[in-house]
Image (cartoon, rainbow, N blue to C red; front, side, top):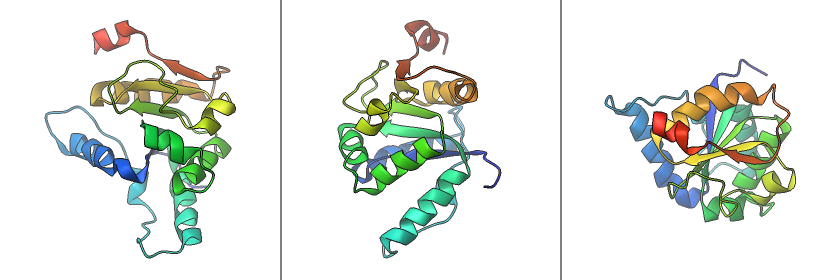
Length: 167
């Protein structure tokens, strides 16, 4: 496995506009938000075979040190269906023991189990739920992801209101 320095952004295909918004935040000089995007590696085409796409997803995640999962009802459904590419990504992120930040698309600052795929909940996987906003996502990537490996915490967590207040 190569050096892990990327952020992998996982999302249901219906929510690609939210991923594109994250890319726009990164490119906007007036927003303090940046991430090294694992999606820039091992590009697949829409015409690629499913096994090729899965291989490339695995390679991308092998270069990731953390994951942002855009939390939506579609992500919960697809991430737990056992068939979709998102379900495959959920399995691989667990296998690689990657820290997962759930970015709630509706701005919710607490844990919303309607946005978290069932396999993460069933495994009691340590996740952090935040609002879908550049400041708190950046804070989570800079803080939670670093502490993940040395933590014995489990299950879904969220930041208290004072963290948002400081940002």
